[in-house]
Image (cartoon, rainbow, N blue to C red; front, side, top):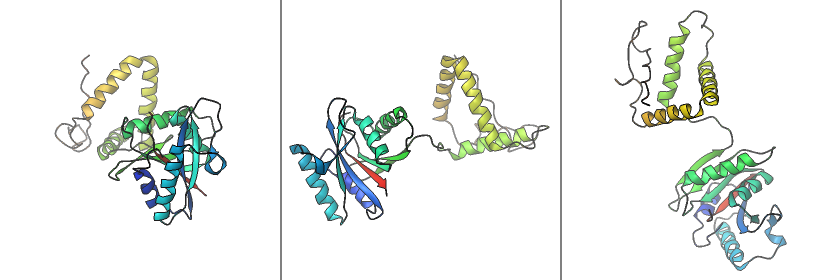
Length: 251
C-alpha cells in the first residue's frame, strides 16, 4: 500500500476476501539496499511517519468492512522482486495492486511475472490483480498456465483435425497432437532461424488483428472433402516506483 488517500485496491481486496477463511496482508514497501530481512512483521519494528499513516488508514478501512488484516513492511531493493518473494514466503494465493501512474496494468503484470520467473524453486503460482481507481479489476495468472484460446482458434484446430484425420493411419489423432506438433515445430524453427521465426510470428500477429472470424469469406474454402472442412493456406510473406499491494494468503 502506498497511498493512504486512495486505498481502492485495499477496498477491492476486502470486498472479495472472507478474512475468516483467508488472511489478508497489507504490504508497505520500504526501499533500501540488498541484505535486509525478507519481511518484518509490522508489530516488531518502528514505523516511519509515512508507514504509520498508511497502516492507520488500512486498519480504519478494514474496520469499516468489519474485517481484520495483517500488516507487513517489506524491505525492497526492487519492488517487484520484493512483492513476489513475500507472496511466495506467505504462500499467497493472490496479490492485489493498485494501478500504477507510470505503468499499464499489463506492464505491471509483466514485471511481476519476470520477478516470479527469477525466483528459485519451490515457488507457488498466484493470481495478480490490478485495480483501477474506478474499481475495475484486471487479473493475470503468474506462472505457467493454459493460454486463453479464442473460439476461432479452437475452430481452426478442429478443422485441421478433421482434415488430417481422414488420412490413412490418422484415426487415433487427437486435437492435442496438432498443438504439440505445431509447438514443437515452432521451437525447432526458432532454434534454427530466430530472426526468421520472429519475423513470421510478427506477421501472424499483425494479420490476426485484421482477421475476420473463421467461417467468413476470407478463410472459407472448399477442398475435395466438401464444404466446411478446408483451411486456407497462409499467404506467402513479403519479406516503478509507485505501488499499492495486498496479498491474500490461504490459511
